[in-house]
Image 1 (cartoon, rainbow, N blue to C red):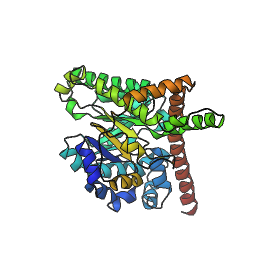
Image 2 (spheres, one colour; image 1 turned 30 degrees about the vertical axis):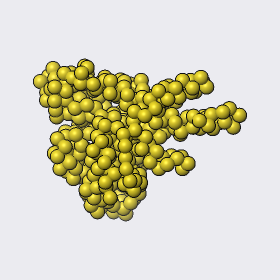
Image 3 (cartoon, rainbow, N blue to C red; image 1 turned 180 degrees about the vertical axis):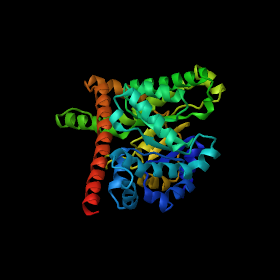
Image 4 (cartoon, rainbow, N blue to C red; image 1 turned 120 degrees about the horizontal axis):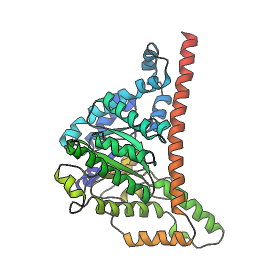
Amino acid sequence: MGNTIQSLYDMGQSIWCDNLSRRMLDAGELRRWIDQGVGGVTSNPTILMKAVTGTADYDRLFDTLLRSTDDLVSLYEGLVLPDIADAADTLRPVYDRTHGVDGYVSLEVNPRWAADTQATIDEARRLFTNLNRPNVMIKVPATDQGIPAVETLIGEGINVNVTLIFSPAMYEKVMQAYLAGLKRRRQSGGDLSTVSSVASFFVSRLDAKVDAILEARREAGEEVDALLGRAAVANARLAYARFEQVFDEAGAFGGFARDGARVQRPLWASTSTKNPAYSPTKYIDSLVAPRTVNTLPPPTIQAVMQQDSAAVTIRDEITAARDLFRKLDRLDIDMAAITDQLLIEGVDAFAKSFEDLLANLAGKQQKVRATG
């Protein structure tokens, strides 16, 4: 067990776990994943909402927190920040062993601030300072307002996981924001080797959207079968091709690299298969690449571990990927509109999870007050 994950690591791809809860930490599950080769953890408001509201694991801590605060956001942070801190401590040996390449745990800024650059910056600073661990990454959504926040935070030496990237155009802005942040940090005399970033490119949701359109076209009699289930991998492969161009050490990035800067690795997110007709490892097998991360929920990690082998596949069929998008364009399928909609839906979903969690805490708060 774990040999496939080690094989991926040997090829340059790290596997991170897309889940976190108090139970995972207390039961030693995270430590076992690390022993199997998992190199990091990501969280988001939906994951944290399920952890806090889906079990009674946090009830005792909640009762304790109620003695000192009635503020719902403070209660939320009092419940989840210890999980982030403990996960960071558990991952710290990985961080040290890989010299800061892996060993990170990610925490999202309050989704309420996705459209507010300064609030995102302030929130990220506060969380990073309060957690006070070098292997924490603050997740900032790839919105137009989030991009300048990324530049500022990288310039200040705060690790950033830029999340909810769907389109090549936005990915370009993300990479340039990272480079601009490195430039700021160098100009201020900061150490480039102490700051890290990943760019979380969401994969499977694009197939879900495009396939729905294609299925409707097929029902109308159009020949589209050859296009089904291909848009997401093609999108990610073209993004990786651009990554290799931007972070070529013979180009503009070379000066930063000589000063100790790390590349901003692409992170493949949303890689669990949504369509049961597709292989459960479809978005892993097709996106094996050097200098990348693939973040997977535990069931998908298990599926990967049951495989016999792995091979670098990211550069396969690049010409075919470009041809696919030309075909979709000829069918008047507006990929820019689809990726814009996916970003809106992603931000809205995280915001709803956050608000649902606060509502759950408010209900518990009222129940405790009524009975106490």
